[in-house]
Length: 225
Ligand SMILES: *Cc1c(COP(=O)(O)O)cnc(C)c1O
Image (cartoon, helix red, strand yellow):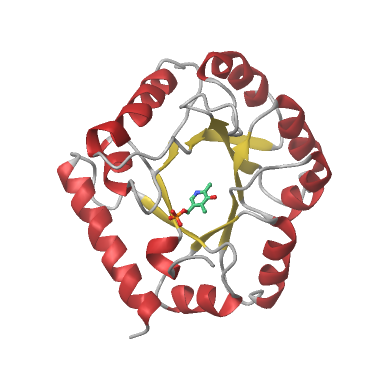
């Protein structure tokens, strides 16, 4: 067994334990393997061990790996910051974009989504800790932006993504996810099914607070250098 396959198994175990502890349905949480800065061979190793969802942060790097891995049936997620000049390629080459943080970006993605593809799955990135340095919209902006983006024809608004300020302590880790989860459940008008919550360091807290996609890099592929 390769190291990546062993780590994958270990992460699945952690996810399963967190689902049980958090009274979640077993198998409800999707593992998104975050492969930024890692070579295509690492993605291939995880794929051969059964992993199908991969997340990338940098467009050019992602496009190169997608070419190298063309034979694999991978579901590609974009999770990095988005500049306007990247939306055309994102709309054409990804299945999901988690990091939408303005109407303008959403509109461009919808306009540029090729019509031979299904609607692009998107999440709104929320700056839950209200850190000025972080991307994402504030919780106060969510209801209006939500209504506007839900109208766009070639997108499927699935939910929200958050990267809270890091905390060591479990109860602290839970707090911002809890606040965001509650804010989203108040938006009753549309169907939302995705909470892109949790990374290597706070997977358990995120799953306890309703995560449906955990984005794991380091715990699967090792430290990034
Ligand atoms: C890098 C990254 C991750 C993965 O973080 P790890 O701590 O390595 O698990 C998750 N989400 C986003 C948005 C990232 O940029």
